[in-house]
Amino acid sequence: MAKLTPLSKTLVTLLVLGGVGTAVYKNRDKLSQLAPEADHQKSAVPPRAELPSDPSLAAPAAAAPGCADKPEVRFYHWAWNAQMGLIYATGGKQAAEGSLMCKNGVNLKLIREDNTDQMASLMATFAEGLKKGEANPTQGAHFVAIMGDGSAPFLKGLNDRLRKLGPDYVAQVVGSAGYSRGEDKFMGPAAWKQNPQAARGGLVAGVLRDGDWNIALKWLGDNGIANNPDETTYDPDALNWVNASDYIDAAQKYVSDFCTELKNVKTGKKEKHCVNAVVTWTPGDVTVAEKKGGLVSIVSTKEYRSQMPNVIIGSKKWMAANRKLVTGMLEATFDAGDILKKDEDALRKAAALSALVYNEKDGAYWFKYFRVVNQADKKGQQVELGGSAVNNLADNQQLFGMVPGSTNIFAATYTVFAEIVKSQYPKLMPAYYPVGDILDTSFVKELAGGAQKASAAQADLATFTGERVKQVVSRRAWDIKFASGSNKFLPEAQTGLRAMFKDLVVASGTVVEVHGHTDNVGSVDKNQKLSESRAFAVKKWLEEQSSANFPEGRVKVFAHGSAEPLEANDTAEGRAKNRRVEIVLGLSQ
Image (tube, rainbow, N blue to C red):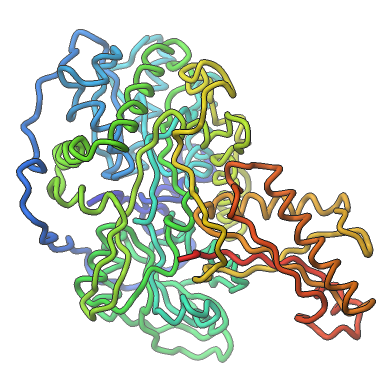
């Protein structure tokens, strides 16, 4: 199935290879050193989705290579709808006659690989071939593609090994074929969506330290809810976990009413607890909905729309010597992205080709779940399933912060989720490489005709109507330091502002409400005006940092003065907590 290999296995393997960290994304296994393996149901393939027959979605026969006279370029990937533009550009498993890849002189070969351990080994094998003097090694991977929010630990482990060959042999991110835009999600009871605090004491099935675990962890942080990283215990004040071997197993644990004995950290006694939530992705979410139902999408990459860009990773040394092939591959992929955004027939063809390339399901399945689908689950409750997007050149310029008004979204995603892994498992990943060490935007810049030159008008940017939040995703207080009685930021406020900025950039599909609060020192009228001016100062600062990510209508301001204290105002500590900026994220519809 798509993206099956567990993170934890990747962590262990890459540590052995010479790295400290590894990927936090859709390929993973259990990490028994961190916590004992919980008993779990055997993984099972979800039932085939009943979809209408459509001849245009039938998988085509494998086409003969169209540019076999060119050097073969091998690209290893998961089964993931975000890569549909890459597949359409290739025309099948290998660059086909008349394909965009062949037109750009790239004999690209697409090879499905669900195991990130193997992806890392393939890239290492390729680098070793280069080290031996081979100009275009016949073994290993020229490129791999993973999720952006897992790239920091993946590249930490891989590049720790590759640096032993020399600084030019490391792997670097050079572009993006698409995004997860809804398929990766945290599913739970509707009551949790209505009141996030109700999730305390919940038991979630999922692959620990993986990309969907990332979604839940961000949601917890934004709502001030503790995470229990020890799957052998139960904390009634935190969100608790049952480790799954893969995303199918996570869904099956919920469907099969899986229960386990856990030690209560408050009482010290063993208690029986049953899974009542899941982190998974398509088709795991489809399995939950069709086989049992009762869960909704608490939050997904629809709201956190910048969290999971597909990132294309290649060998720095080989790419430097073969710039034309790299730019040709990227140009073909981006041009295909433009086509699929506008042409429904082309999208159907790309879905059919996806079934061929992945050797998985059929074109109807990939087509149906390319966009977010709202359908009734087994209990008749409406639930959102699926959702991806393809990227063009303008999307890449926005992703890497290469046009006026944009910011480096990839850098924010890379850092935010690297810090989550580092904070939860500091012994496994105590550090990671700076973005500048693992990112090369020169190929995208070359295609754009130079940095900040091409228009970003065609980029897929979120738009907002200016309406208030109707469906709250998260609520979080930020300690932003202001000068006494003023809306001027103190120097130490920059740390909090930058952290808040990156957090909100990742959640770029949400409306942002800035709520200003003060303590009770001074008059009620003065405090009301002060809270408003401070909230407006935060709004202005965000919009100045990136007008593309904080466009007209996204950020709204609300002033509460001293009317809603968190603590009593009779102590200095209480007053300090009451002087705050609260950020509410949500959807306006």
